[in-house]
Image (cartoon, rainbow, N blue to C red; front, top):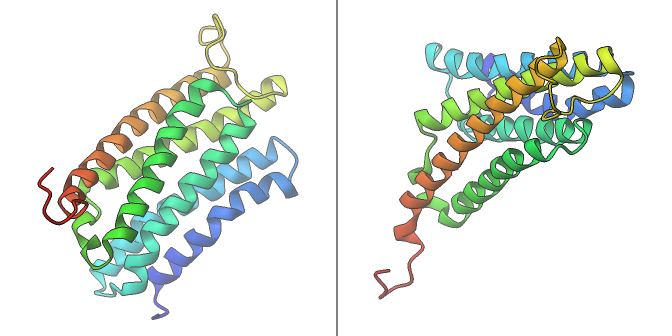
Length: 210
Protein backbone atom coordinates (compact mmCIF):
# COMPACT_ATOMS: atom_id res chain seq x y z
CA UNK A 1 0.00 0.00 0.00
CA UNK A 2 1.21 3.50 -0.88
CA UNK A 3 0.52 6.19 1.68
CA UNK A 4 -0.80 8.91 -0.59
CA UNK A 5 -3.69 11.28 0.06
CA UNK A 6 -6.33 9.36 -1.94
CA UNK A 7 -5.56 6.13 -0.06
CA UNK A 8 -5.54 7.95 3.28
CA UNK A 9 -8.97 9.45 2.52
CA UNK A 10 -10.30 6.01 1.62
CA UNK A 11 -8.92 4.53 4.83
CA UNK A 12 -10.42 7.37 6.91
CA UNK A 13 -13.80 6.78 5.27
CA UNK A 14 -13.57 3.10 6.14
CA UNK A 15 -12.78 3.95 9.77
CA UNK A 16 -15.59 6.52 9.86
CA UNK A 17 -18.21 3.82 9.16
CA UNK A 18 -18.12 2.25 12.66
CA UNK A 19 -17.68 5.75 14.07
CA UNK A 20 -21.30 6.59 13.23
CA UNK A 21 -22.89 4.30 15.88
CA UNK A 22 -20.16 5.29 18.33
CA UNK A 23 -21.55 8.84 18.27
CA UNK A 24 -24.66 7.51 20.01
CA UNK A 25 -22.50 5.84 22.65
CA UNK A 26 -20.44 8.90 23.55
CA UNK A 27 -22.96 11.72 23.06
CA UNK A 28 -26.49 12.37 24.27
CA UNK A 29 -29.19 12.98 21.72
CA UNK A 30 -29.71 15.14 19.74
CA UNK A 31 -25.94 15.86 19.76
CA UNK A 32 -25.32 12.27 18.79
CA UNK A 33 -27.57 12.69 15.75
CA UNK A 34 -25.73 15.86 14.67
CA UNK A 35 -22.32 14.26 15.23
CA UNK A 36 -23.34 11.17 13.24
CA UNK A 37 -24.69 13.37 10.45
CA UNK A 38 -21.50 15.48 10.34
CA UNK A 39 -19.25 12.40 10.35
CA UNK A 40 -21.31 10.70 7.65
CA UNK A 41 -21.33 13.82 5.44
CA UNK A 42 -17.57 14.30 5.78
CA UNK A 43 -16.96 10.66 4.92
CA UNK A 44 -19.34 10.87 1.96
CA UNK A 45 -17.49 13.91 0.61
CA UNK A 46 -14.19 12.02 0.71
CA UNK A 47 -15.82 9.39 -1.52
CA UNK A 48 -15.71 11.90 -4.35
CA UNK A 49 -12.34 13.43 -3.52
CA UNK A 50 -10.30 10.23 -3.17
CA UNK A 51 -11.25 8.96 -6.62
CA UNK A 52 -10.88 12.37 -8.24
CA UNK A 53 -7.45 13.01 -6.70
CA UNK A 54 -6.23 9.49 -7.50
CA UNK A 55 -7.07 10.01 -11.18
CA UNK A 56 -5.84 13.62 -11.34
CA UNK A 57 -2.53 12.85 -9.61
CA UNK A 58 -2.15 9.43 -11.26
CA UNK A 59 -2.08 7.76 -7.85
CA UNK A 60 -4.58 4.99 -8.54
CA UNK A 61 -3.69 1.81 -6.65
CA UNK A 62 -4.94 -1.70 -6.00
CA UNK A 63 -5.54 -0.76 -2.36
CA UNK A 64 -7.79 2.13 -3.35
CA UNK A 65 -9.63 0.05 -5.94
CA UNK A 66 -10.31 -2.66 -3.34
CA UNK A 67 -11.07 -0.50 -0.30
CA UNK A 68 -13.17 2.21 -1.97
CA UNK A 69 -16.29 0.07 -2.60
CA UNK A 70 -15.84 -1.68 0.76
CA UNK A 71 -15.77 1.68 2.56
CA UNK A 72 -18.90 2.79 0.68
CA UNK A 73 -20.80 -0.38 1.59
CA UNK A 74 -19.67 -0.24 5.22
CA UNK A 75 -20.81 3.37 5.53
CA UNK A 76 -24.21 2.72 3.99
CA UNK A 77 -24.95 -0.56 5.79
CA UNK A 78 -23.92 0.63 9.25
CA UNK A 79 -25.72 3.97 8.90
CA UNK A 80 -28.92 2.27 7.74
CA UNK A 81 -28.84 -0.09 10.73
CA UNK A 82 -28.47 2.87 13.10
CA UNK A 83 -31.22 4.90 11.43
CA UNK A 84 -33.62 1.95 11.36
CA UNK A 85 -33.11 1.40 15.08
CA UNK A 86 -33.59 5.05 16.01
CA UNK A 87 -36.64 5.38 13.73
CA UNK A 88 -38.65 2.96 15.82
CA UNK A 89 -38.29 0.07 13.33
CA UNK A 90 -40.64 1.89 10.96
CA UNK A 91 -41.88 -0.64 8.35
CA UNK A 92 -41.85 2.07 5.66
CA UNK A 93 -38.12 2.29 6.24
CA UNK A 94 -37.39 -1.38 6.90
CA UNK A 95 -38.54 -2.52 3.44
CA UNK A 96 -36.23 -0.31 1.32
CA UNK A 97 -33.39 -0.91 3.76
CA UNK A 98 -33.91 -4.68 3.38
CA UNK A 99 -33.74 -4.33 -0.41
CA UNK A 100 -30.49 -2.38 -0.16
CA UNK A 101 -28.87 -4.79 2.30
CA UNK A 102 -29.96 -7.84 0.28
CA UNK A 103 -28.52 -6.40 -2.91
CA UNK A 104 -25.18 -5.58 -1.30
CA UNK A 105 -24.83 -9.10 0.12
CA UNK A 106 -26.00 -10.65 -3.17
CA UNK A 107 -23.58 -8.72 -5.38
CA UNK A 108 -20.67 -9.25 -2.96
CA UNK A 109 -21.40 -12.98 -3.07
CA UNK A 110 -21.45 -12.95 -6.87
CA UNK A 111 -18.09 -11.17 -7.01
CA UNK A 112 -16.58 -13.66 -4.55
CA UNK A 113 -17.88 -16.62 -6.54
CA UNK A 114 -16.65 -15.26 -9.88
CA UNK A 115 -13.13 -14.76 -8.53
CA UNK A 116 -10.86 -13.69 -11.40
CA UNK A 117 -13.92 -13.00 -13.56
CA UNK A 118 -15.31 -10.52 -11.01
CA UNK A 119 -14.03 -7.70 -13.22
CA UNK A 120 -17.18 -8.37 -15.25
CA UNK A 121 -19.06 -6.81 -12.33
CA UNK A 122 -17.00 -3.63 -12.26
CA UNK A 123 -18.74 -0.62 -10.75
CA UNK A 124 -20.95 1.05 -13.34
CA UNK A 125 -21.90 4.71 -13.60
CA UNK A 126 -25.45 3.80 -12.55
CA UNK A 127 -24.08 2.05 -9.46
CA UNK A 128 -22.17 5.21 -8.57
CA UNK A 129 -25.36 7.23 -8.82
CA UNK A 130 -27.01 4.61 -6.62
CA UNK A 131 -24.38 5.08 -3.93
CA UNK A 132 -24.68 8.86 -4.13
CA UNK A 133 -28.46 8.71 -3.75
CA UNK A 134 -28.14 6.31 -0.81
CA UNK A 135 -25.80 8.71 0.97
CA UNK A 136 -28.07 11.71 0.33
CA UNK A 137 -31.07 9.77 1.65
CA UNK A 138 -29.18 8.64 4.76
CA UNK A 139 -28.04 12.21 5.48
CA UNK A 140 -31.64 13.49 5.27
CA UNK A 141 -32.84 10.67 7.54
CA UNK A 142 -30.16 11.48 10.12
CA UNK A 143 -31.37 15.08 9.97
CA UNK A 144 -34.93 13.86 10.53
CA UNK A 145 -34.05 11.79 13.62
CA UNK A 146 -32.17 14.72 15.13
CA UNK A 147 -34.95 17.22 14.45
CA UNK A 148 -37.57 14.81 15.79
CA UNK A 149 -35.67 14.45 19.04
CA UNK A 150 -35.36 18.22 19.36
CA UNK A 151 -39.06 18.78 18.65
CA UNK A 152 -40.65 15.84 20.44
CA UNK A 153 -37.96 13.79 22.18
CA UNK A 154 -38.71 10.79 19.96
CA UNK A 155 -38.10 9.29 16.54
CA UNK A 156 -40.18 10.45 13.55
CA UNK A 157 -43.11 8.17 12.75
CA UNK A 158 -43.64 8.74 9.08
CA UNK A 159 -47.10 7.78 7.91
CA UNK A 160 -49.13 9.21 10.79
CA UNK A 161 -52.16 11.15 9.62
CA UNK A 162 -51.48 14.82 9.07
CA UNK A 163 -47.87 14.60 10.19
CA UNK A 164 -46.47 16.05 6.96
CA UNK A 165 -48.72 19.12 7.22
CA UNK A 166 -48.28 19.66 10.97
CA UNK A 167 -45.54 22.26 10.48
CA UNK A 168 -42.93 19.86 11.85
CA UNK A 169 -39.54 20.14 10.14
CA UNK A 170 -38.72 16.68 11.47
CA UNK A 171 -41.77 15.20 9.69
CA UNK A 172 -40.92 16.97 6.44
CA UNK A 173 -37.32 15.74 6.61
CA UNK A 174 -38.50 12.23 7.44
CA UNK A 175 -40.88 12.12 4.48
CA UNK A 176 -38.19 13.50 2.16
CA UNK A 177 -35.70 10.94 3.47
CA UNK A 178 -38.17 8.11 2.95
CA UNK A 179 -38.91 9.15 -0.62
CA UNK A 180 -35.18 9.30 -1.34
CA UNK A 181 -34.43 5.94 0.28
CA UNK A 182 -37.24 4.26 -1.69
CA UNK A 183 -35.87 5.69 -4.94
CA UNK A 184 -32.38 4.60 -3.88
CA UNK A 185 -33.69 1.10 -3.11
CA UNK A 186 -35.29 0.85 -6.56
CA UNK A 187 -32.05 1.95 -8.20
CA UNK A 188 -30.12 -0.46 -5.99
CA UNK A 189 -32.35 -3.36 -7.02
CA UNK A 190 -31.95 -2.42 -10.69
CA UNK A 191 -28.16 -2.41 -10.50
CA UNK A 192 -28.25 -5.72 -8.64
CA UNK A 193 -30.31 -7.27 -11.44
CA UNK A 194 -27.89 -5.81 -14.00
CA UNK A 195 -24.96 -7.48 -12.25
CA UNK A 196 -26.86 -10.77 -12.04
CA UNK A 197 -27.55 -10.73 -15.78
CA UNK A 198 -23.84 -10.16 -16.46
CA UNK A 199 -22.85 -13.00 -14.10
CA UNK A 200 -25.54 -15.47 -15.23
CA UNK A 201 -23.52 -17.11 -18.05
CA UNK A 202 -20.88 -18.11 -15.48
CA UNK A 203 -23.45 -19.61 -13.10
CA UNK A 204 -24.54 -22.32 -15.54
CA UNK A 205 -23.39 -25.91 -15.15
CA UNK A 206 -21.32 -27.34 -18.04
CA UNK A 207 -23.55 -28.75 -20.75
CA UNK A 208 -26.61 -26.74 -19.71
CA UNK A 209 -27.85 -23.77 -21.71
CA UNK A 210 -30.53 -22.55 -19.29
